Amino acid sequence: DLKQIAVDGEPGLATYDPGFVNTASCRSAITYIDGEAGILEYRGYPIEQLAESSTFLEVAYLLLNGELPTSDELAQWTHDITFHTFLHENIKTFIEGFRYDAHPMGMTMAAVAALSTFYPDAQDIHDPENRKLQITRLIAKMPTIGAFAFRHGQGKPYVYPDNELSYVENFLAMLFKMSERKYNADPRLSRALETLFILHADHEQNCSANAVRSVGSSGVDPYSAAAAGVGALYGPLHGGANEAVLKMLRRIGDASNIPDFIDGVKGGKERLMGFGHRVYKNYDPRAKIIKKAADDVFDVTGINPLLKIAVELEKIALEDDYFVSRKLYPNVDFYSGLIYEALQFPPEMFTVLFAIGRMPGWLAQWEELTGDKEQKIARPKQIYTGARTRDFVPLAER
Ligand code: ACO
Image (tube, rainbow, N blue to C red; front, side, top):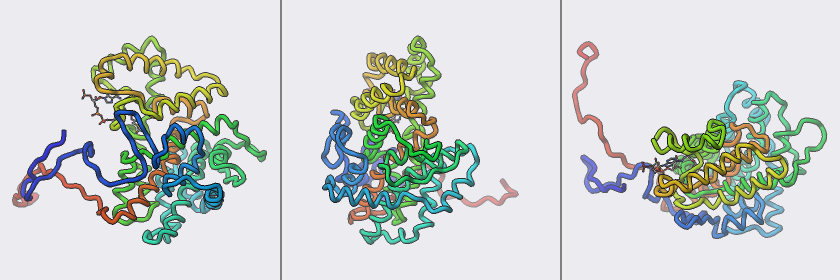
């Protein structure tokens, strides 16, 4: 619904495009999406190939640097990330200060923002080496923050990073380790989580990336900009959707209740969570890969009974004219919650997992933004609809 309208009191025309449905806010060389064809590529590499063959740190390197790393570059990058996994003890104390039932996403957002006070050197965003250091710190510390937030909610002691483990295995150990013994994750489960991180690593101008760019365009440090991204991701229409999917599947309870549920959706009572996407008007390519990852995980953990409802729901929706005519297909969140649950994550952790996976994408976009001479501070126009000039009325006369 792009409308060109005159802005009252200002010369010329302005474009009214709430939600930026048809407005490009930047140029970017990072992620390519063709929503009609269901294509997603990071730096030109198809998501299917990356999900099959790469690691999350390789993908992070690719997003940030534009090329896949050589083996020397990957070894150095892995070393740098590993070196920065620990949090300052006062960040731990900060997390301890939250209520016992604080949402881990709120704690994560706060901890990411708090890092800006621990690294005042991050204010210098004009030095590329300095930016690289802050980027490394953020990617390295995200799993530690997420794991501490998780253990806080469980009332369990925090587990410090084990830098002999890979990025994902270390994260799982910090989450689930319960004794002094070395934590050994099932490689099929850690690979499934790694695949999910890869699938979530970037998605061009989504709501949270736009938040990072918008806040970052003021020249603020990357921790503050990334905290804005975490905040945007927290919302149920963005990163919170997979948690909402599980709640929805639980409420449906049995495949026999699906027709009534669908009638409610068609009647406008609620949305079918995990369906529809602003860009994909075809099957979300990530959803296909996730379906396969779900099979691998359920081979290890046994079938989640909600999977049956999800599969049936998808089948019914894809045959229903309401969904077909609006081009509503399953998105990345439709099956991801089921996998997270099988991996023993409580629903409130799902969005934190998304944030850990998305951090390289936010930072690649922030890095791109800082080097883009054309980029101005984000400052959209508005169409003013309020009262015009009037005289102040004293309190006694109102
Ligand atoms: N269930 C039922 N109807 C839907 C759904 C849905 N999930 N999504 C869109 N529609 C309908 C709308 O009611 C609207 O119908 P209308 O034309 O009759 O009014 C039409 O489809 C277009 O919907 P919009 O809201 O205009 O689409 P938009 O591009 O703004 O929204 C969004 C995209 C927010 C993802 C939406 O599809 C949605 O709310 N989905 C459910 C939440 C979800 O799964 N979010 C995860 C997105 S992926 C991610 O963030 C990682």
